[in-house]
Structures are given as C-alpha cells and as structure tokens.
Length: 566
Image 1 (cartoon, helix red, strand yellow):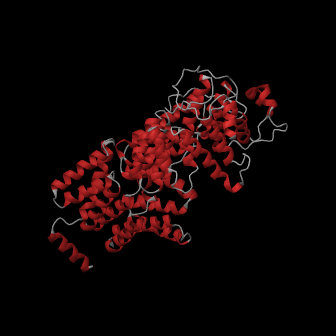
Image 2 (cartoon, rainbow, N blue to C red):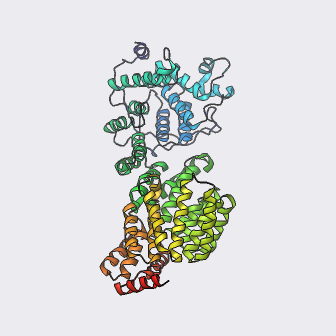
Image 3 (spheres, rainbow, N blue to C red):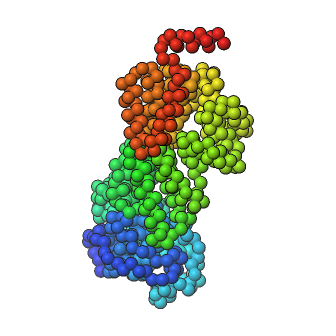
C-alpha cells in the first residue's frame, strides 16, 4: 500500500508499464571543468557505445538518461570508478533522477570510495538550494549513505519499477521501516519478487534478484531468466562466465563469454573475460587477439577519460593475462612490446618473462630475471635457476639448485606449490643425469597430483608438468612414457606446442613418418604466429632430446645391456 501511494503521488498507476529501453542519444562531449563533489572525479566523457545496455529511468533529460546507461554498462563490467563518474555526471543533468542516485550509491559502494564523509561546500552545486536544505544539518552521512537517502527522498518522482528497486536496496541496507537485521535480504528479495510479478521484463529487477539469491549458485537461474528478456544483457552474461568457471564447468560458460563481448563492444573487461575460459579449454586461436583488444581499449580509455593505470584496478590483471597468452603461443615480439609497457607502469610479470627468455634460450635475460627472483624469494629463485640449467644441459649445476630448493622446501612443508616445483626439477634432473627410472617415477607422481587440479589448469598451465614429464622421458630414453606424457599434455591443453613437437620428435625418431608429419603440422598451426626462428629452435631442441630414444629393438636391447653392465 505504501508503494502504491508513492506511485500515485508521482502521477503513475502502480501497474502501468514503463519503457525499459531508450535509444542512445547525442550528448555534448565537453563536460564542465572541475571535479564533482561526491566522487572527486572530473565529469564523464561520453562512452555511450561501449556497452549496448539501455534501461529507461525517470528523467526528462536525454543527457541524464545517456549517462545513467553509461554508468550501468560500466557497473556490469566492474569498472566502478567509471560507473560512479557517469552516475554523478547524470545527476548534473537531472539532480531529481532517483535511479541515478541509486546507481551512484551502488557504484560508490563497490568502488570503496563511499565511506568518507563528503565536504558540504560542493553539495549545494549538485543538489540545488532546496535539495541541500533538505539534508541533515550536520552532514554526517557518507556518500554511499547520502546517495541512497537521496534516492529514497526522490521515490515519489520515480516510476513504480524504480520505486521497488530503491525500496529493495533500502531494505537490504536496513534503511526501511520494520526491517530487522536478520530479515534484510529476505525483505529486499520480496520487493524484487513483487517487481518481477508486475513487470516480468524488468532487466534491473532480474539482475538484482539474482544478486540476492540465497546460496553460492542460486543466482544462475535468475541470470538465465534475464537472458530470456535480453540475450546480451552485460551483467547476466558476465556473471555466468564467472559462475561456470566457479563450478568447474568452463566449457558451458563459453556462449556467455561471447554474449558478454556482443553486449559490450567497447568494454575492455568483456574481451578479457573470455580468457578465463579459453585458456582452460584450449581455445587459443583467438584468445590472445581478444586479450590484446582488451588492453588496447583500456589504454585508449585511460587517455580519453584521463585515468591513470593505478586508478584502474583491472589493468594489471588484463596485461598479465595477455602476457601469459602471448608467451604460450610463442608470440614473443608482441610479448616484449607489452613487457616494455608493463615495466613503464611498474608492473612485474616475472614468471612469464622468464619463460619467454627460456624458450628463446636468451641466457643473459634468464640470468637477469633470476637475480630479481633471488632478491625476494630464494626458493623460487632456485627453482627457476634449476630449470635454466636443465634447458642448457648443465646437469651438475642443476643438481646444486635442486639441493637448494629442497632445503628451502623443508622449511615450508605446507607449501604444496613449492613441493610440486621441487618434484618437477628433481625429476628432470634425475632423468638428465641417468637415473631415468627414479626421475620418471617422480614426474609421474607430480602429474597424478595435478591432472585433476582445476586451479592448476587456469591460464593455460594444465599441461606444463606433463610437458616436463615428456621431456624427462625423452632424456631418459623411455619412448613409452614420452608418448603417454605428450599425449596427456595435448589432452589437457589443446594448444600445447611442446606436446605436439615432443610427439613429432618421438615419432620421427621411431620412423613413424605419417604420425610425425601430422604432429609437426599441428605444432606449426599452434605456433603459426611465432617467429620462425623460435619455432625451429624449439623443434631442434626436442629432436636433440629424442636422440636418447632407441630407434630399433636391437638398439634398445644394447642400451639395456649397457645399463646393466654399469
């Protein structure tokens, strides 16, 4: 009844439908100078085409509507700073837009900038004299609370849909009458259930009902219901990518990764998110290009909106993900260009830079990276040093590094990642020095411990230990285990070039020419955009290691006899 009265006071029948979409509009691109009082940011510049989402709100200002849409698009991509900026800019065009206040409240809450009490001087400019006078005398509210309070005060001016959305948030925050601490979420969800009963096409209602669903996976049905209303809703698609990754079913999330990109063609995060799934399920053909587009869009956004990399909490992660993909695909020239930019931002992706130097056999760069590891992490410094020595064939020094790593691991027995790294380099070392049986046993143990580890398979890492097992088997002269290991590598990462080249080297050595040709073709496709010299270097390295494999049964028998004689 209360909401009905509020709705009627605004001149709108409670059940009357409201438009949920409005076309994008042309808005002047020159914001007013100076910083806005609540966010402390300069006004937003138009980025209306970055996201296609539109949600009609109670305002007669086309500029306000356009910036509300921009704020929502930013919010659904977790760009909290820009969601807040756009929402406050919307309010500069219409300070009586209740939903713009709600969007600003949500954005400040997520951005983490809403807890500081605002300066009263600038608020008069945003609220106007009447609005400012209506605020509490002592102005003790934080921006997040103030903005939600303003949304509450302006409810009579809002549509019935917006009233229910605002009421739900007030209930969730304990700012609505007769809502106890233990029933906030229940009452908030009930208000949204009422909204969706009346207006089943309300996209904001479906999204926020999903957010209030009880249980870790309970939101998924609501997101899917929202996609029935709008198949390219940015928030629903984005959240479902995370959902399917979270329940360890990444392949099922792929359509939603594509839907997210369609919904947000100018949002960097949309093109980054596909990598969360693609690197797990081996979709390497385009993932690096999409990740590259994410970073390019992000750098353009920084320049356009006047944002520093440090203010963009997503940028470091996006650049690291791109670096991982480029190194995985042998695209070292592009990875080095990103490395130069990252170093300019004071970012450090040392493991990826070391792997790139190792693949290029750039021993001086490897040594440079090792020095940075050793300064802060003696254990991992020894691990990476052992890997370099094993690649160079310096078995004796590799053994010393393994000893150092073992000593470090003894002081960190609960560190499973360090234990696994010890098994990897110790197994490789044993194979290289002639104790293949012990080395392969340890490497197989490592693979068995990680082959079903979902976290290990993130970012294309699922085949790494299998590749080490296969290389160790080549060095130990064990064709059977080498073949099994490299096949497992390709099964766990369809983009494993070392898996493909390892099988090529093995089959070529054993005279299995058709299989060798097929594996070489696959390897060439996987590293199609690598520099030819880098591909040939890796190919030659695998062939060299495969020389330990006996070509014929006679050779195998002779090799066994020599081993027994020792």
